[in-house]
Length: 239
Image (cartoon, rainbow, N blue to C red; front, side, top):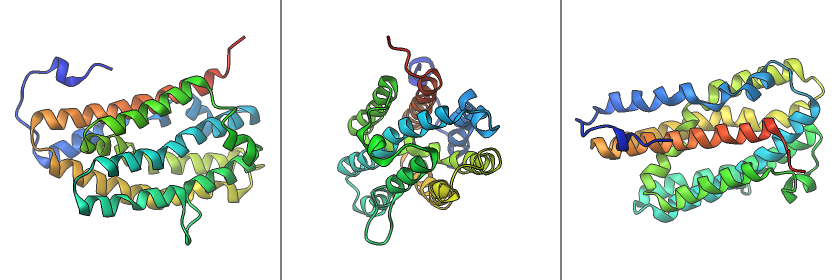
């Protein structure tokens, strides 16, 4: 991906509403448009393909709380840290919430991938592992507000999740409905998280350069999600 900073001249920064619209406009590159997800939503995937997807996507699930911890470690603002830490509990769980990773285990079991197999990560493809680790490195090394901007893929998640839920319930009736609870929870959590992150990015980024860097960060994340699906669709072609 070529950074907009490498190709565009200095410009007047967007007004806050315009900047928010520019971030939302990146959704036309969301991975719900990837051919693999299109086939999933249409009920065209085999059981083996669904199992490959859930086992590999687990790698991304376990990266999420680690990248959020990286954002926390780089963020100097106490109020932001106090708000952002809830994302770690949402995925790792606590005394009142089993968390997204546990819900992903349940989804895996509903698709025929047992917990031990998924947790071992032995089904994770090299390109998927590389992409996930690259995202974690990005969040560790970039300024915290750019890492926050990369999380704005959640702006586009709820719409895709609704389509995915409907497709799975319609086309894959063999999936235990309890296995889909992960997606139902994200319909509630993702809009909250996305709005908070969007407000942060729009408020903190008032120069043209900082705004462009945040758009680049979001596009890096969009690329990372797309590359994962490229690898999952291809499968393991090693001899």
